[in-house]
Structures are given as structure tokens and as C-alpha cells.
Image 1 (cartoon, rainbow, N blue to C red):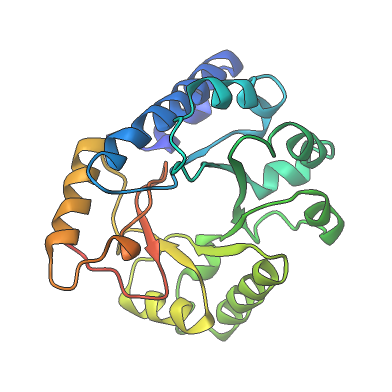
Image 2 (image 1 turned 60 degrees about the vertical axis):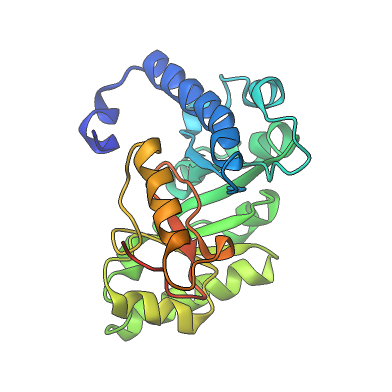
Length: 234
């Protein structure tokens, strides 16, 4: 499996748009595969800021979305630094994407120095805390303070906080204590093909104390799980 950093920087604008469209449609069509075996997952994909203005995302979602009443919608992750660089992006997202089951997550939050006015104009569902702050947050007071501030900020906006790049049990326990809603990273599960992800879900559900409520959610970067309970690592 190729990591995005190994090919994304070399993609042309057209190739990046086609890749985003493919990822979006695949995620929408994949929901039923998981639903058939009992997993109602909120899948998420990364959407580059440059694609928001050119790709008819809302129309694609409306055309390919599952017609089940149980579909929880799809999460589109937009990097914070891209929102900061492009002044009109937040307004365009708010106008065109807050429809038909689409939710917005601000990715790598804390790295782009967003202003509060920019956050106020973008009705986001999640703030994803940059791994730069999650790393060693159990040991470094400054990182811990930043993580706690972002978690509290997300909750005050009525949104969820997601810890990115959790690699150790200490980091997981730290963000759990801070009240973080979700976590993702190598400790929980790395990025993997869909078939392997489904096997992981079934294996964890069949394990001791398995519960669908605590199972990982699908993401373009790998699985994530509720941070309020320690995930079972296969």
C-alpha cells in the first residue's frame, strides 16, 4: 500500500481531482459492504482545498450515497493550513458542502494558525489534533496543554475532537483523560485495504468484550476508535 506522501506531491491538478472523485465514490459505495455485516460506519476521506472549488462534491454525494435511512453520512477532511492559505475556502465549504449528509472535519488542527473568525464561518463536525501535539503529550506539558485546549475548543463548538497519530499506550491514556472523543494512529490500526479492515472489525468484534459501539471507524488514513475506551489491538 502506497502512503499519500509517496505520490501526492507529484500529482497534477487534474490527477488530484480524479483521485479525490474516485476516493469519494468508493467510500460512498463501500458503506453497504460494512453495513451488510452489521457495521454502520461513518467513513471519511481527505479532500484537498484546491478540489473543493472544482469538483461537484455535493452532486456526487447525492448521486452515489446509500439510500438507507441508517446511513450516517460521510466526513470530508480538509487540512487546516489549506483553509488558512485560501481566504474564501471556508465560505465555499459552508455554502456548497453542508448538505445531504456531508460533514466537515478540519485536519491537522493546530498547525495552520486558524483565526477564530475563520472557525466561526465554517460549521465543522470535527477538529483533528495534529500529531505534532499528540506526540509525547503524556510527557510534555506544553503539548498536553495544547491538546486539552483544542479538545475543549471542539466541544465548545459542539463538535468532536479526534487525536491523530496515536502511537503509544501513554498517548492514548493521556487523550482519554483529556476527554478526547476519537483517536487514530498506529496503535489502533494502520492504513490497510478494505478487505483487511473488514477482517479486523470482525476479529475485534468476536474478541473478549467486543462491541460494535467501540469498533474503529473508516478513514483515509486508517482506522480510528472512540478514545473514551481503550481499543483492542489485534
